[in-house]
Structures are given as C-alpha cells and as structure tokens.
Length: 68
Image (cartoon, rainbow, N blue to C red; front, side, top):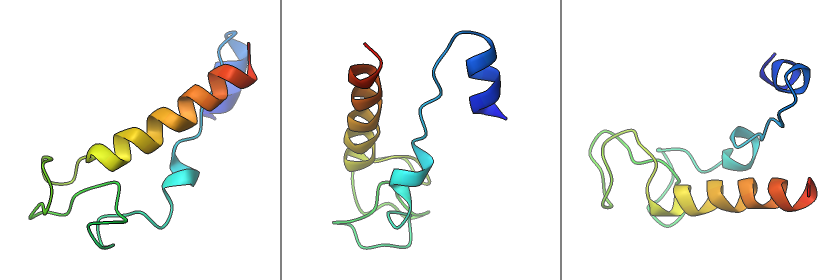
C-alpha cells in the first residue's frame, strides 16, 4: 500500500524493512540494527543503532542513485 501510494503521488517508496530482516533486536550486538529493551550499544531501547542507521542510509542512497 505504501509503495502504491508513493507511486500514485510521484514519489519512490524505499523498502528498508527487507534489508533489515535477520538484524532484529534478538541478534548479537555485531549483527542487529535495532537495540533490545536493554541496549548493548549507544542507542535508545527498541530503536535503530548506528549499524541500523548506516544500513538504512545505504539502502536509501542506493534507491536515489537508481532513480537519478
């Protein structure tokens, strides 16, 4: 639905969920993109950590480059 709405309004939907699969809060600190309730890295509980933001940024930059 989000991709359809983006396309209908001249925008591009960037899926950052799929690349994050397997990098959830239950994974080890060297893998996860989201911190668990008791964070092991510098991030708020149940929020993206630096690795998650870097991964998200890479996906968004890839989408920008693919659409320019």
